[in-house]
Length: 615
Image (tube, rainbow, N blue to C red; front, side, top):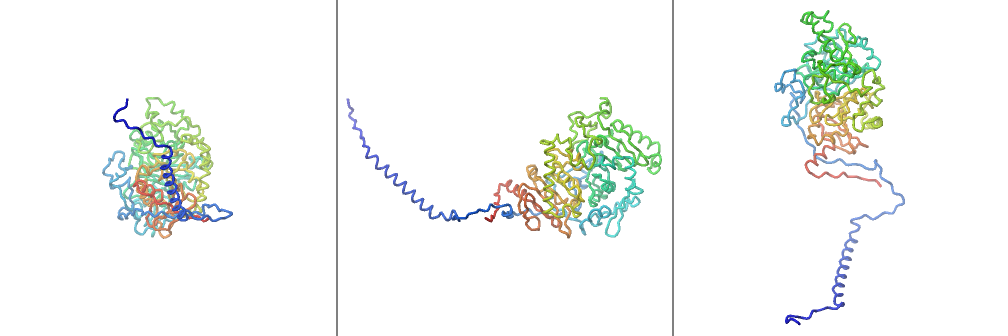
């Protein structure tokens, strides 16, 4: 039955549906032709017309030039002249904040961010380009280190002598009455290994003006001289002005910034360190950094007390007691008296672990437990325990280490502790740096000449840069990041020297002490940890001004080559992977990687590098 509302359904036939679909198809076709017309009319604006040619020249590196990135660099004002010798982490103006126990105030105490100076350290009035090596070992400009205290107070000891516009260094010292040369001659008679390349690396604690380290350079022994910052003596500043390796440091409550088993020899010439006090903790630190079979040399009280006690304001009984106490303490640390003559006594650290194996648990000092990392040395307290060398290393002792200069190219045993370290990687690194240094010399002709003396490799791995320049009249301070891969032991095993450091803090040196800074990936490695402007300001602080010679002082190794504007110099296009900048009148501006990092951190666009290709 049908409903009353029922209406028959309408069924359009097939032909009626074809019409609207045909119309839609025509509309789409027309629109496509319209777009095609626009495209064709503007085609030449979008794509250049192809020029038929038979041969296409492929662009080479020389055909490609990179324009300088135009970024406004930060401008830093100059500090006041009373900051000319500013050492941020060993600042005498901040000493009163720290204790005097064990001279804690002389250790590193870096200012917090809000106290950091953001200005450029000025040179002294009358500053001159330093005298070149080797003449600098014997003389320096008075105006570069204008301090008369040593000249006035130590004139009877012949440390230095002011003559006209210069300081002269006759080679005297408290224990060098016949000169440092005669002193070292006697030492070589006591330690024959100093003559044949067995002894290569040394540390001088309480170095004076580093005459001992300077003399050893001519005998093939590389010495780091350390002394604390003070108000008047400027010992380390004199040493570096002379071109002798040195850094600010003191044996106090923190470990020295060196790995264990590093130095072949340690030296103290009346350095006034109370070796037997505080349970012998200072000697325990010397024991830690001294290689098995290495030598500790002491001259001054209480050595030769039988003949010297009257001049020391003491009694013969007191000095004999001190000497006996020192010998007993050294014996408990597995040292033995190796040789002694006149004012010099030499002890040798045990070459193997047999002595430590006999060390009873209740003995003093006790052996360090396994939880105390022997190579940790960045703000690590000195432990009052005996660091036992790793018995797994068979070539760590001085008698097993290859002699100099062969040890420079032989893969050190400790490379196994470095991630990815093996003989193949070591040889590859050595070869790589030979090639790079050869290229550097084409960019920086002064490299390898007497124009550059004090050099720092700010972020090294195996010391390859220093090894490639070993025959040049220069020395290199190899710096290994305290937060990176610990390869410093490998560097010392090669017969080179270096230190741990965190580049978010100031380095332990005076201003104007290095001629050249070498960087390999430093900004990439450290930019996430702190503001790189502080690193740049620190670089400016420790670089020597160019004076009138406009020498080149800073080189940056980057993953890419760029032309960068530095200071007031011209933009320099560097081939391959080298960036290089001038420190022009104490002014240094940031290299490319740093500027890009700043832009990224500020979420700002990075300008494109323009390329011009000659096809």
